[in-house]
Image 1 (cartoon, rainbow, N blue to C red):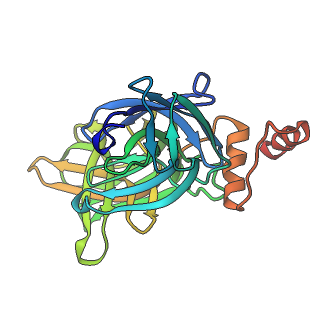
Image 2: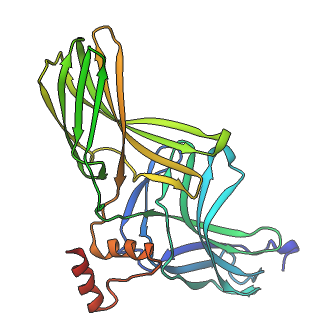
Image 3: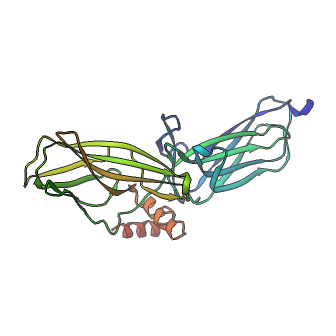
Length: 331
């Protein structure tokens, strides 16, 4: 054995058991780029192998234990020293001892609760990752694998239309209506705008989708507004009695589900912002919050989401009767 145990080291690798077939999803990194990560949903099992490859054959590796963790954490950029963990699971793979050969260790985190969607924003990051660790006297050997989690929802039971008015006394009276208040992320916003009274000269009108990220509490609250989309409704002067239809397709924009008070750390909300500009460049606004949700495209996964709410885990592929039940519930 060399002095201080530096004679041997190892490489760690984490391999998922279904890595060849599991779907990947694009996710924005902190520097604004997009990478692809393995995609998981709430209630799914995370399993695989940790491969330990010794760098110097013939030399032993002393260690104080080998483990793997599944972690879900929130990091606020203005408080980078503190990582707020809302999921923390640990599996011990090997007791303290020595490794004389490269070795693989199986692991499984069964039906893991993943309550929130992965998110990278202006001031906050919510992420899930696997971390393998070989504990040593002076310097641990670690390896992380990041995954992405999507939260799925079913159609909301109540989804009322939105009706609002914009008015300036004796000058302007506009009514606008959207077909509903909750939209899935590939949905179409359909609406109409009615001009009941127009005595000012409007030259431009648009609808913006605004994303508002809120982090912190009390006096340390930060708001970041980001204009996701601009949709021009008209360019020119409307007349009384005119109505203008709206069709805004959401699929082409970079959206996330609405997130409200996630672990009491942050929120992400979306608003439709109606903007009118008159010939003297005065701007008139009317804002309305909408709810965005991620639509489950596979029955089994949406069932898993419902089961999570009831604190039960469901696997639609486990038995034929379970699959039949899933189909019945989807009808």
